[in-house]
Amino acid sequence: MGERPRVWVSQPLFTDVLARIDAHAEVVRTPEVAAHGSADIAAHLAGVDGALVTLNERIDAGVLGAARRLRVVANLGVGYNNLDLDALTRAGVMATNTPDVLTETTADFGFALLMATARRITEGERWLRAGEWRRWSFETLLGQDLHGTTLGILGMGRIGQGIARRARGFGMRVLYHNRSRLPEATERECAARFVDRDALFAEADHLVLVLPYTPQTRHIVDAAALARMKPTATLVNIARGGIVDELALAGALAGGRLAAAGLDVFEDEPRVRPELMALRNVVLTPHIGSASGATRRAMVALAVDNLLAGLGAGPHAGRPPN
Ligand code: DGY
Image (cartoon, rainbow, N blue to C red; front, side, top):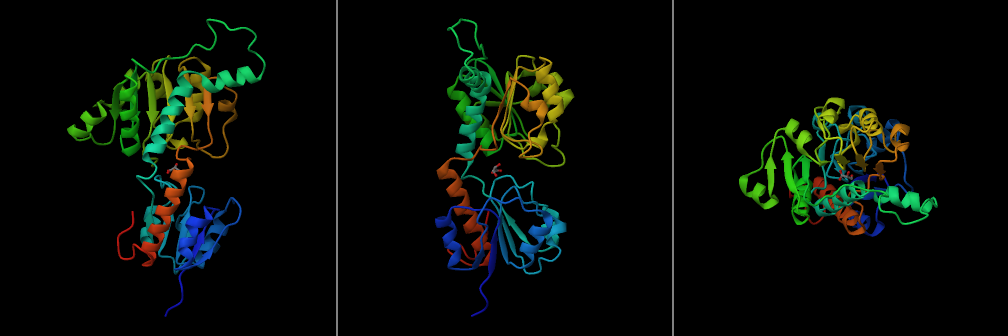
């Protein structure tokens, strides 16, 4: 029998789910949440056949140089902008992600953020906890309705479609823009109409960003795009922070050119710009779109399946991973 493969797990993850790897490989675990720099990542990758990584770890040519035996990188997330796919392909390393298992949970969260943003829920809580609520009054914390308004969805993949299906139950009109138009049957199921990007920005009362982060989508929501939006509109980002020019957004929110924003993702996580922190009309959450216990466990289970399949071990050996 040959040497057992070695695997690096970059962050602490559910131990019982990870235990499935032990039967097939030696596992180098990370006991505490760690901020791995490139040198540290490169050193780990140099000694392993497989790695299970999160969005915190950037896997590019710089860290792959000495990774001679690496065969698979299993990424924990549907987004994989932390992986340089060209560099991985050149190095002959397979990359996998965890789609599907997080779709509904993330769509739920997108809707929660839409509601919190439109109805000023966290702002109200901060106000109450600060002891500002002295008497019930008719004109306090007036927000925007969701029902009867137009929801714009930029990026109509699985999560975007999940949000559209929820919007239908809320009596919203749904417009979307995507790289390619969806099949008619899917549009019907989501009750969503395709429009061009400018129209989406101009017509949405609430706009949700659910598109992948690529060099082409970086700062796609810039000052010019924001200027197209209604001053009463809200913007929700559950995709990646870099899609939005955060300074332009902070300026629009501070200047009353946009009503409010709900942000779960930031360009330089975990740093949140002081310009955003200072604003009353922003709901800020720490990248928790897929963070239900069941879904996070399902993501790890799928990443473990992918990793084992990539190593040619485990229950899915020989089957192509996600
Ligand atoms: C994803 O799946 O891309 C989420 O952002 C968590 O990683």
